[in-house]
Image (cartoon, rainbow, N blue to C red):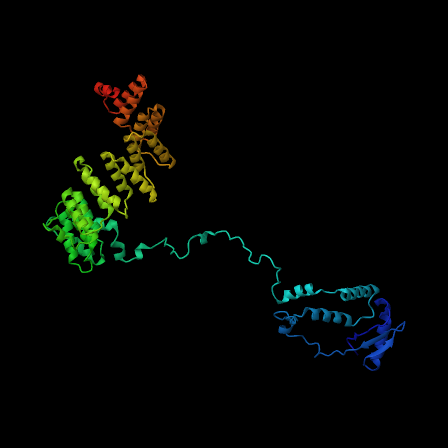
Length: 508
C-alpha cells in the first residue's frame, strides 16, 4: 500500500478548473497503481492526457537533513556574470520562449506571455545606448567634450586643520614632580633669587660655599648669573665676587660668559671694579656680552668718562655694540645740559646704523632727551621709524609726541595725534591728562579742557598742581572769575596753596 503519491501532468488543449478533474484523477490513480505500481496514463473527460507517477515512500529518501545543510551559513553565490550584455539579453529571451508551458494556464496568462514576447522582439537597442549600458559593467561612462578640468570649491576649514602642519603641539599638562631636580632648579628664578637671600643671611665670617655646595651638582652653566645680579641689587658686590670665585672652581660651571658679564656689571655699577691703565689691552679679548656688561656697569655707576672711553675703544677696534647701550648712555648724558654736544654726536652715530634696534622704552627715552634739547625733528624721525618698523606706540610714546608738538607750538598737529591716540583705544594715564589739558589751554578751548578734567576725576586720578594752574589760567583768559575761585578752593582742599603771588603770575 502506498502512503504518498505524486502526480505529474501536462495538457495540450484547454483545461478545466482544478475542481472538475479531481475525481477522475484520483480514480485512475488508484486503479493503475494497484495493478502494477508503475507510472501510467489515462484519458480524461474531453480527451486530456494525464500522466501519473507514483513515488514509493522510503525512509532513506526522506531522512532529516543535517544542520549544516538545512541552515547554511550564507546563501549560495549567484552565477558569474557574463559582461556581454547583448548575449545575456538574447539568451534570456530564448529561455523565456523555450520554457515548458502548462496546459492548465488560463487565457489571461497566455495573453500576458504573448505581449512580453512581442515587447522583447520589438525592442531594438541603438549603438549609443548599447555602448552606454555596457560601460556600466566595464567602468566609467565616457564624458562629452567640455570642461574636463572642473574646479571644485575648497572644503570649509575644520578647527583641527587650521593649525599649520609641522609645528609641535605644546604639552599642556606637564608633571613637574616627575622631572629631575636639576631641571627644576637650574633656571628657576624663585630658587636662584632664594639662593641670593640665603647668601645675604650668612654672617661675615662664613663663605658662600656653605650655601652653594649643597646645590652645586644640580646647577648648570649660566644658572648663577641671576643670583649674582640679585646680589648686586641687594648691595652685596663682595658676595657676588665670592660667588664668581666659587664658580671658577667648578669644572662643569666654568668658563661661562653669562656669569662673568653679570659679575663685571655688578662690580662696575658699584664702583668696585679695578680698571687698569691699559684698558684697551684688558678688554681686547672680551666678548661682546662682557664688553656691553662693563659699559652698562659704568653707566649705572655714574662713571661716564670711563663709559665714553670704552665706547671710543670699541669704535677704534671696529667692534659693533648694541644700540641699547647707546640709548642708556644718551639718557645719562642728556641729564646734563652742558653735554648736549656729546648727545648729538651719539645720535648721529645711531642714525648711521643700518641695524638700528631700539626697544619702545629706549626710543621714548631718546625722544624726551631730544625734546629737552629742542631737536623736535629727531623726535618726529624716531616716531616715523618706530611705526615703519612695525611697532605699536604706547601711551608714553603718544604723550611724548603730543608734548613735543605742544613744545614746538604745533597745536593742530598735536591735536591730530590726540585723535589718533583715542582711535587706537589707548588708556590715558595721569601724565597724558596733564599734557592734553595743557594743549587745550594753549588752544584756548575751554569746553574740551573741562571735559578732560572731568574724565581725569572719573578715572580715579588726583589733579596735580600744574593742572589746577592751567584751569585757573584758561578761566581767567575767558573772564570767568567765579570758576577761578571754585578751582582755587578745590586746589586748597586738595592741599595746594595758591597765594596772591601765584594768582598774579597766572594772570600774566
